[in-house]
Image 1 (cartoon, one colour):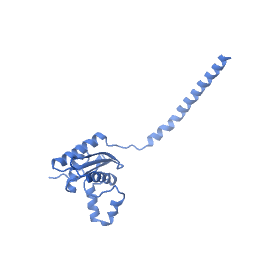
Image 2 (cartoon, rainbow, N blue to C red):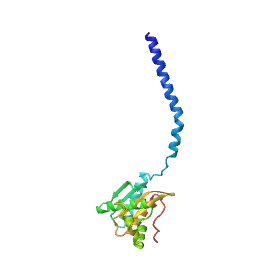
Image 3 (cartoon, helix red, strand yellow):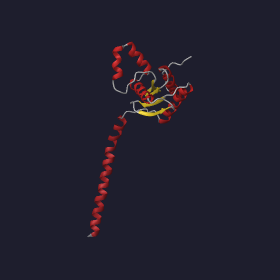
Length: 183
């Protein structure tokens, strides 16, 4: 009797395993196409973000400017940030907001600020949310043909100087130039 009970239990267990295996084999083709439909997204690696930040800090430091540099991803989420020794506390927020604005609107913030000056009816663009800052120093990070984020520099004595330091960061990682080279 015990043998028959063990044999029946074993048969049920084997049958259950076979049914589960058949379900996986049957349903597996339906899960692969769903994964294929997910969007593919290029992400700026942390190593490149760090390299860009260091190059921007070095460029500003060489000229005696104490700044903060922020890198955001394409969604505007902070990836990395550094504040140079002696940089003002306000530079942390300004660098992050410039990076966010450049990534979100996919344009240099100097270009956006000039556009708003020329076309005052666009001033609302700067008030889309509290993360926007329409001051020079923010550049979109474009690698290949993809905007992968933004870099923002705050603290140099002029937007064109923040732009130059941000461009040094882009140059260090081989990103598409966004500021014309100075002669």
